Length: 405
Image (cartoon, rainbow, N blue to C red; front, side, top):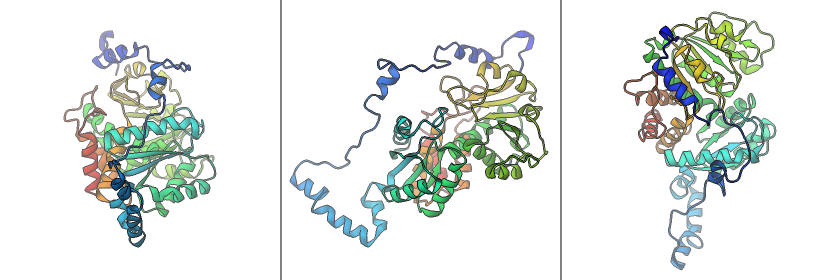
């Protein structure tokens, strides 16, 4: 959305102010005295008992000999584990460190701080206990087998930062083999919050959700899931682009998951580069980390919407996006309209655990997105999403999920 007479729009004014923040862009240097490193020193989580251990009587109840009675009861009736262990409120946050944030394949040890952070978010926002599990990477079959063998400890599995396309097959096999919720947050958490944001952004620009022309840049875990949920939500024109351009049936270089995308998206049969997809598009959703030039977004439709979600460096800098779009969102917390998965996953697992749901269904994901969107009564260009600290979010999502269990 270009300013009239050279006068910056309110959105541009806010973005320019945010851009002056010295935290953008961030650069890396190791300094133990830096507040970031001090905040992580010693780790961010601990194990704490829920029952008091004061004397021999407590010891006899909590451990031997009393605990043996509980073990015998569970051996006879495994369903009792949900009542007499922490399993029913504990999720494993599992990664092999092959696709961590925007950092790539940095390995399981370097992924551990991220998984610890995820555990903090689960507990703070959803009251769900979470345990980081960082595995050495291997084949799909090796990872699936390792997770299946760990599963008796947990009431749910949250897959995190596993590279595509392996992540699709790992999730599929685990959902088939386990009777507990399995959720790949990089896919479905991103998709849920992106749809929630788009529901409200469409209201701001006064466009019908189903009629939007949407371009998704990135055909990895997040891009595939975003495209799928948009189509399920009724959006008819979704075009996905990878590093080689528009994904269409005419391409001969598509791997299996991209073949499936080609069959379910791009209804106008477009081909060519990203700029060909963006010509006249209403929405750009970036989930690739690849940079997009200003001239490429300049050809979008009036009152455009740009979600540049790569972290820490958005595909389109918000100050550039503000010259061509009416609504802008990023994955960062230092610009308006942060699209953050924490709005989704704590409430999803809270609702699944509370209702005893054996899986998180596609209907639950749609319901979660609509629940998140509903918490912004009157969306504006600078507020299309509730704050991650809005205490209504997790309970509202949990209730929407539980209603469909």
